[in-house]
Amino acid sequence: MSKKTNTLLFILGATLFNVIVTVACFIILVLLYGKFFFNVLPKSGDAWALPIIFIISIAASFFVYRSLIKLLMKKIDMTKYFAPIFGAARPPRNLK
Image (tube, rainbow, N blue to C red; front, side, top):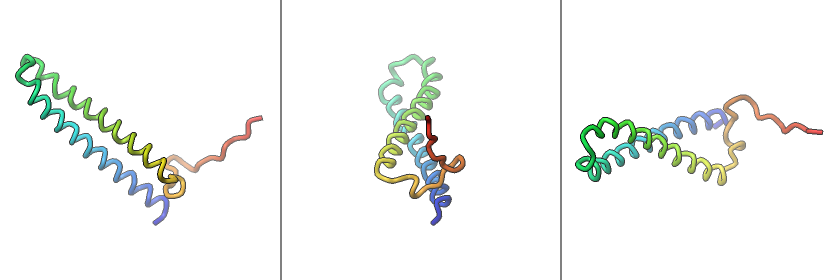
């Protein structure tokens, strides 16, 4: 496969992985909220719970995604298998 095909498949796979992690975090946090906080907090807090849980699940999925990408970048030479997304890679400039 070409570098562009590898890049496209990687982006699609990484996006799917990120969505799955976000949904999993959201479900886990909703279950934890239902088990520990639903009866403790006042009912007016329920209106705030889902948006806050949603934001936390997005942040958690971003953290997991970023950590796994860093780990992958240590193990794989990205320039060898993937094409640059935003134009060609530029050589470093000689600063005098």
